Length: 210
Image 1 (cartoon, rainbow, N blue to C red):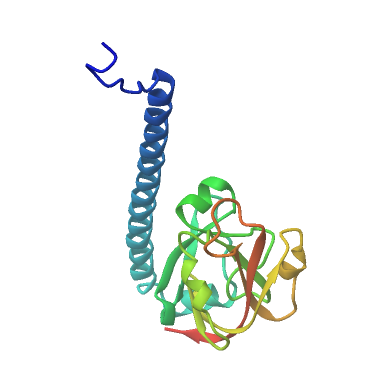
Image 2 (image 1 turned 180 degrees about the vertical axis):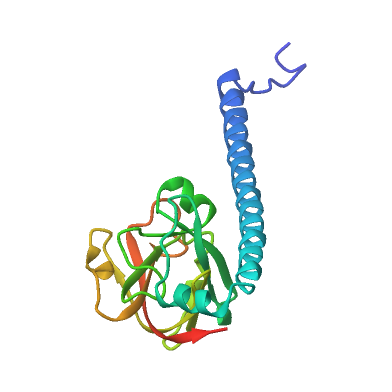
């Protein structure tokens, strides 16, 4: 009897169940990733169209009213987009919403409400995820130009410095007397999970453009 058949090792149900569980978790994570990516793209597309429409309406504003509008950038409601930021050389382009809560940062770049608004004297601070809008910042160089379009005017900044700091270092967004822009994102760029450090860009406003 012992030579009439070979005994096959039987895989236990526990091992099979564990394998199926891993597969299910992986598929769920992939589904969540693609859902969030699509949701973010749809939101950005909608906000871009809405923003461009408001800019078109602004061109019909009488000259005197337009001049007053650009002289003092307006504040915005808590949930409103304040503008659009771009780094032309790197192909970065994203709408900027007011606030840096999790929901805002899942859809857009966020503006820290306690800081200045574009065009105002002071430090305009924005933050965004490294794995969505700001991944290409890893290729940023000194003197690169950053554009910030708003309904109150379009402002151009030139990169002066980049640094890597600890998350607790809030001095990088401290108020300034000059018109500055600070961009904050997580670092390292290819880190999986909650990145331990922050990549900070400081840029100075060089003027306005049409």
